[in-house]
Image (tube, rainbow, N blue to C red; front, side):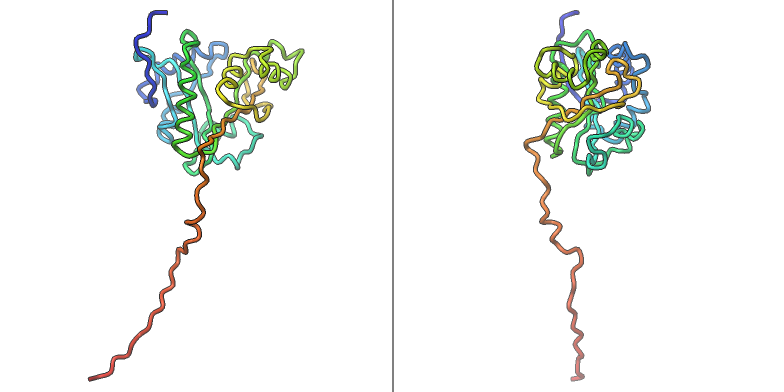
Length: 235
């Protein structure tokens, strides 16, 4: 790799799509066709532009973090990727939601190991705090699980990764970034052969979250006026 002169983190733009697509194809080389269409990216940028974050190396998009805001109470911990994204329509996004839900994050292979992924995660955390959301949640892949699926259950695999007895490039990274495991999801992402279609529901809690005050709810929206009509006598 040539020497890097500039690294930039900024909001994604639709003009970045061709570079973004190439990075996605390379990032998911073991999963043919696993990249977002231009229409999908356009929809995300229209709905929630500040939630789509790109990392550029020498002015080239080499990675990205895509997110939605959802009302997590409507989904709970047992959901699929299709459900949380509204069948990939992103209609589940709502400004009144309480959770920043990560729907994708990736780094082009040749730029991994440069802490670019950590920068994307830190940007997500900062956004979560700025928007006063309760947490960041996502279903994380376990791409090395297929190698051990015949001898380990997903729970056993996660425990070994958690205690650093094994290494998983995705799960190990997420655990090192202060995310904790909430649950194992079954059939989360159809077609994810590496993870055997399992996913690990991960959460990062926003310790600065402040619950909106209920005081405003105590104010009456209807004000009663007492009116008196005075009869004027002729002078």
